[in-house]
Image (cartoon, rainbow, N blue to C red):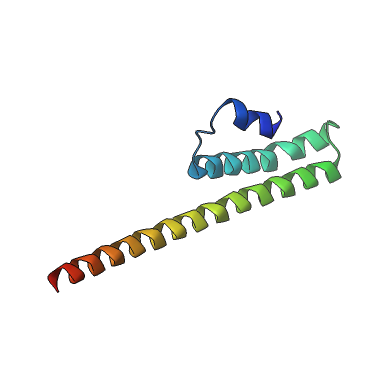
Length: 93
């Protein structure tokens, strides 16, 4: 799938929470399944290790992005609250 065509044809309706959960499931599945694939000759040990580590990086990147999103949303909410309090203070003066 070409990512640029994905966004030009439809909106991504998945939340970061959903993407984090999916990446975590995929990471756990790879840790469980890939060793059997190596034993069966379906994949080399090096390739399995690389793919597991890559998915781990994807998971942690999405996880961190979600944390940053939540922090940003909290900061915005606090700023909006502060501005509202300032407006109410100005009206009282």
